[in-house]
Length: 123
Image 1 (cartoon, rainbow, N blue to C red):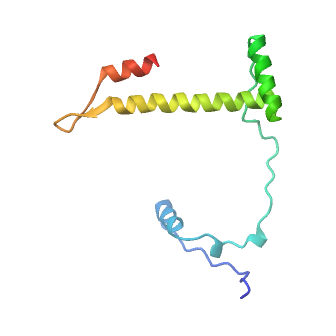
Image 2: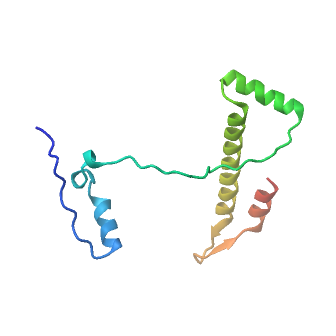
Image 3: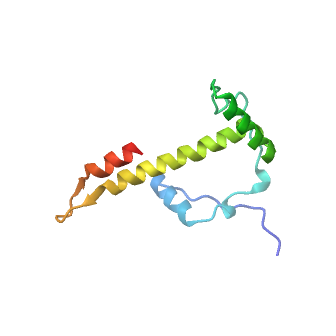
């Protein structure tokens, strides 16, 4: 059965909340014709990275370059991956420690347990 090329008309929405609810429960494909899609061009976009200067011990840089060479990737890219993984791990371990520090009391209220936070801050 051939696909129809005419798209369904969009309903009129009274509010953004109503439109949001509609799209959460409906598929977009009957309402949009992909044949009419155009490529978007975004000139003059600024890169989402920032250049920094980082001094590393010579031996550490040599090890990093060796690891990157074994993986056939630039050492700067490997360093970014290592940093991203470590920051994510540190962030999750800190938030997990602070999240566990809030324990419900018998009355159902939450109180901050200082011992858990001080241990989490020490690492």
